[in-house]
Length: 462
Image 1 (cartoon, rainbow, N blue to C red):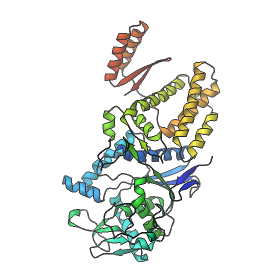
Image 2: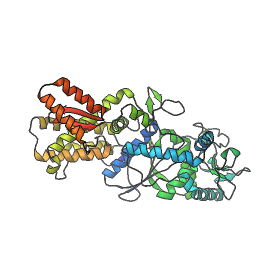
Image 3: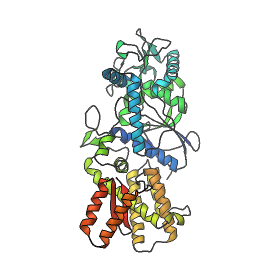
Image 4: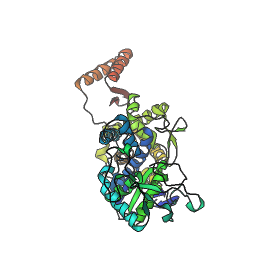
């Protein structure tokens, strides 16, 4: 099956054809750094990581841009509340975000442009919109986009502005859905903005949120690029406004494929900061979650389906991660990598078809786990061939390069831990199960988990 994605712009699956053969320009809406990112935010970031990993697996040369929104209504409000500079707030939460990304094993973007560094590009775009008659000025130095000047406004979210009474112009970055309004490209300076201000030909002020992404994406990827991602909550007004201002400024189609991930639910309700029902990554770490377990929960469901994140599902995720890690260790001990000749088992083609079908991760995982069960059965019966072992290694390595579920096995075991392991093995050999369990608990307290397998004691870090 050829690679295809559900293109939100067309409301249908479409075979993916990059603008330039073998290369993909990918833009993903990054965080607004006024607070810690929560697990609901990471549902979208994780889907984007899966998309990027799959494109890389298919040998595409991916240029990935993720913006950092470091000036908008929220960041300015937070800085004012904390009585510190804007950069003090945004630098702090940018650092936390990057640490969370790394811990969750997400492949870094190639470029992380910040809004404050891209002001000249925004001013240039606004100048073009004014010159072409798509925007207008106000006496306070603000500039607004005239949505009635763009006939295709509403195509992404299927809002027909001709059938609705459009609202008055709106200064806020975020506003109610299904209420088309002229939106601010530039906000004239107000006292509450404090020192957050830049000079522009039409007056001092700061950019609106929507123009920021248009400027940062085009600056790094050009006026027309392949894929733009985000959560469904960004479709209106943010992505709708991006399309309007970008196409009017450049006379280019802007983005060929729009991919959106659904909400992450918590106990049946939407997870968000405004509702106060969310988990930070730091809180999940304290609850004993591993990065791999979180990745499994977020990727086991299809990105276009609502899924529920649950603390109660931790055990399920841990079991899956352990099965995969055990399988990796088992193949490693059998020197499966030495039997590899670069070929894949038959199941891989089914796996690839499922992933090519709009990243159908639930079906792809089902194919992989069924295959893994078969391979384990052959190993148990000692009927697996060297070529099958080599193919198993190739498939497993490819699988993990896409999903990142296998825990890192490459760690150095301290001498004290090795001594405890040997002491425990001796207790087991002597059928001293009480001593064996006590040592297991000691290892756990020191940050190590030991599991007993047919191949001996299997040790991993907590």
